[in-house]
Amino acid sequence: MKTLRYLFSLLVVAVAFTACKDEDLSPYIDYNGVNTPIGINTEQVQMHTFWTDTVAISTEMAANWRASSSASWCRIEHQPGTPSTKALNVITDLNRTYEARTATITFEYIHDTSVKKVVTITQPGKVKYAYTNENASAPEGMKKNAMFLLKQINVGWNLGNSFESDGDETAWGNPVTTRDMIKGVKAAGFNAIRIPVRWCVRADEKLNIKPEAMARIKEVVDWAIAEDMYVVLNSHHDQWYDRMDSTKYVDDVVNENFKQMWTQIAETFKSYDEHLIFAGMNEVIERVNGNENWGSYTEKTLKRQQTLAQIFVDAVRANGGNNAWRNLMIQPMAASADFALQSDFVMPKDNVKERLILEFHYYQPYSYAGGGATNGFWGAPYETLDGAYVNGESELADKMFYIQTKFVDNGYPCIMGEFGSVAHLEDLEHMNSQAYFLKNVVKSAKDHSFPAFLWDNNLQGSTDGENMGYLNRNDGMNPYFPMFIKGVMDGAAEGKYTY
Image (cartoon, helix red, strand yellow):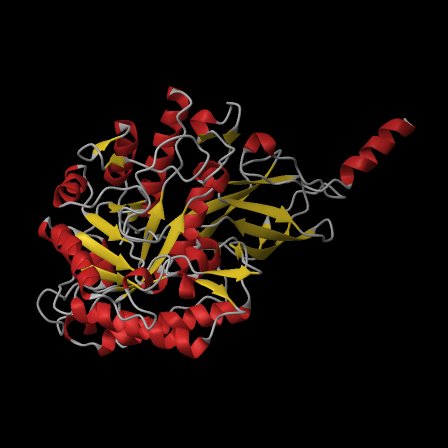
């Protein structure tokens, strides 16, 4: 008898556990067991935000009861209180869409389910920025604002390891770029090309660019535009500023040379229409005692990089002509999505609305996509295999969501200026996983409203090094492995811009 009383005393102090599935529900058992009407102080609960949110409601229920939710993203949990008066937390998960959503929580007595009360929970969606497609004040050929312009890009390609090499365009083993190569890029399905350029090896110490060097870059830009492609022209591996070494960095000199460089580029392309986009920098990082630091930066280094970003915008705008309206791309430190998401990164000021674009690069996880990769597989279909990287899809979706929410939803369209993976060629299964990775990155980028540009340096081989060759420049731009290009194009076809 004492045992039964003891068990009963445990039962009567038990606290209800609420969940979304009835089979998971356990009742709250009060002290007196008297059936009374379910007392809840509201029939409607409005959540505050699309982020994970919590709102408390009060209840008075003096009998065995349970609660169930109609949606997995909405649930309740108890707060401490007396047996007959409880505060309940309504908790909603992150709403990744632009649409408000509703769920209902049903409270009912366990032994008399006709006694119930339904509370409707409403959670707002994200707030969409009201972009305009065109600026009527802009001259012909320059009317498209950044978001509308980027929606014209299906998927882009990088002319990697050519004009950003430390000598002429063949210094890193690539052949001279030809018009047929550009046509081959277009034929493969890409309608945009990013041309990385190291200007300092084509200029004197004051960054006066050699006329013949500028003419060569202009020639390649013209070939791409003649194919009705969009072109991104940048400053890439200009180590006099983008490997910031505090022991050698002289702000006034660097700033003046940077302005001089971009003023010349702007003047050369002054009459070009909106098919040409300028990107101020590439992956600016800090050097400490000669070592490149990709994982962090100092406040001083960030300030220097953001000063250069403002100089870039001001120099291009001051040049006039079509450059007064040109769409311009801005990079965070290291072109890192993670650094872009930090609170200390801000976009520069511009006197033209909706013409600035954030550029970030995506080689994540680096243990799969980067040089010396240790993970041989990516994606849910391959997670049970040895050497697999797990949770790849969810990490990708989260990163794209946060970039979209901070920038696209606040008036700054985005470009994934580089993405790709080192070769995983051990067997067909490894290659299938790489094709799956490429497809998912392009699709997720597009689903969050950014076009993606494949990094292609024309290198193939093992994972020891940045071997990211996709179109063979030595063989008529035929794909090294068609399945990889198919993965990119499938992702572009399946992805849908949300703006």
